[in-house]
Length: 427
Image (cartoon, rainbow, N blue to C red; front, side, top):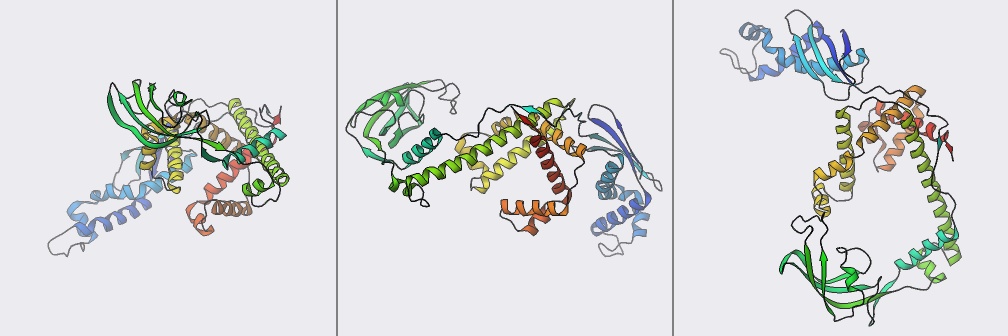
């Protein structure tokens, strides 16, 4: 095979390649074996026509299209490898010649991975607006949150205050006409939670059990139900009960209720301090990694990102997100119904920063290539074991699902990220 690539644009070019006679012969054999089963010829049982008879009746050329389909994928991959290019989308193939007895000549319009001109990526100075220090206030806030989670709601006779829960019946209407979804019975609403339309909860502060109130609100302009967006509404509301949180006393007994592994409040405080220390350290390291990679990307130059790569990244991110939802038992249809979003909404959401994600991936891959990282068998085995544990899959299944080249690529990328991050100077 001979193959060559000529650039015709920033990330586009023409790949010219040929398919040799030996490969063509194999393709013709495959094509004949595939089509002969559909041919009926007088004097022959169906599917039993000889190759010689077929070519005498139809000509060898009748097999060319099927033969080309059979050999093209492998021939194209070989041409790409020989030309030393990295396509990022399916090519547009054009057949130049399929002359009998000659090598077949083809061209392909190919979009290739853009060139990355790396800037500095070691010893980058970065700023991180986080601290690893855990204060007494952090521990107290964690304790207060845990204490509040064990609070019980008890009925109160006094007027409702922010933070209290009111149990209400309500019927909503616009211009005197009730609308779908605007009715509820014995609904528990925590005042100040922001659960309802802006302005609704504030009008129930000061009410008592038995009160009937007309709550007047205006739906936001971007409200998900388009027929209600921006419209004024009235909710006829009856307060059935007012409840307040009764927070238990913070002592050794409560500490054991919060965490059965501790015996005293002091032990719980120490455990929370340790957990918060680990969380803050992880958050700090993540922030350094993000800042350092952003700086490396900023220092590099990529003239233009192919639209095909942006499109692929958006769909990869969407599939990954919806796949995660599926693992939690939430189908895509259910997710869109629950959130009120559409597939197009989700597409736009991931499209917003797709360019940045693609640019970051390209720079990190370029750094990995520049450093020429070598991946050992032990590192590959460790990566497989880690993935198997992460997705609760047998090791052999992971090996079968992921090509070796992909595993080595991912390990090299991790090494590049570690190099950028570990060499960064944090202000």
